[in-house]
Length: 358
Image 1 (cartoon, one colour):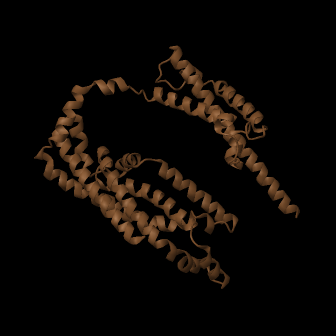
Image 2: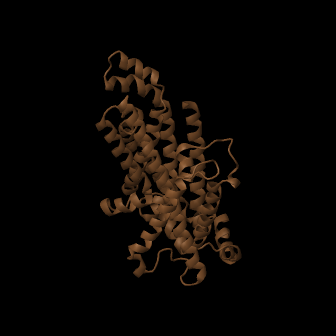
Image 3: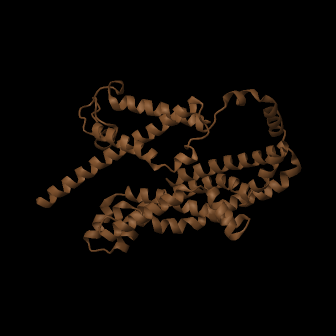
């Protein structure tokens, strides 16, 4: 009984800490963005300089004051109770009553609204949005559109050859990723790794590694592998393979977490080993969705492989990038048309295959 009470108290404490961290983080980001907007509109610094001047970047006290201020406000806000004054973090962790007052009558509602507005204006300044220039530079736009709607046949043969390479580049990356992601997905499924401390540790490490791998774009992986194995389609295959392993592991593991536990419990009750549970209780349930996810990933890789070529990873993007740089819009139009037709055909084909599988 005492152990259960301690466990409940520990969970409550952890939830309170999570709510506080959410409130403090949101408030801290809000303070930094408000400060940036004040600096940008005061004319003391260009809107493109989100960071402070170099001498102030080294001044950790500047950021420390923001952290302390946000923490104090979050601490006070977290003590508030009631549907009107409850904090955003408390609402996210514990939930709120659906029959409560509308957001316009709550503190967290107005806080979320103001934070969204500040974020939008901060993003507008940081990304240097220039709608006037976009809508008035028609001369350049006319040249581009004229070239795209009048494709040139000079690059047609080379484009079709590299387009075939693009498709197989995506296929090989997906094929190499399937067995690796299949094995790792069982380690990244929460329902299969919650039995012992070591299995939970393996789950955490696997999930963390896959999240970090997936966070890096294939274009960056292509640059890394180009410096490793040189320019060419093999570097593109490796780049898409790494990203596909992480993405498929996430999709596979989430599907494993949603399986029917009945067959697993039945096999376990009869004394089946972990390998037998996987073989007869888990795998038969996940094979159809696994195939669907794999085909969908191949479709995605075909689209990505066109961009991989921009940095030397092979495929049709390898000849598309220099023609864009030189303004050869007729040849660009031919290559874009080839890419569009291929992606369109792949999308229809993959959709039909997924319908038959599911």
